[in-house]
Length: 107
Image (cartoon, rainbow, N blue to C red):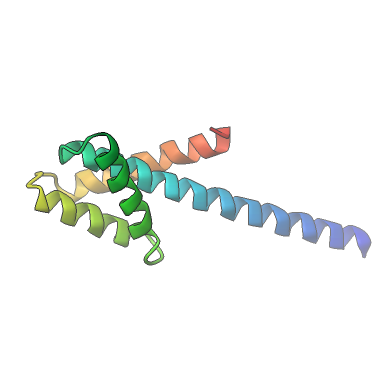
């Protein structure tokens, strides 16, 4: 039984680590998308960093990506930035891939 228990613990540990890495990647994605949107809205330096932080916080409101999308869509609309929903979602997907690679590389 010991070998079975060891294997079970190893799988549980791996699952927990995978979940932590995915959480970090999603937070990083929100930051990357926030910085991208900030640039489109003309925000610079500290204002852009503050906006990106607000996007990360908004992404924590509910499970999934719809909260993140609604935040970005609404803010871009307020600043009269013309982008389609598809363009925003594509950027979110691109940023998630970049964030996952970054987290996996430990950077």
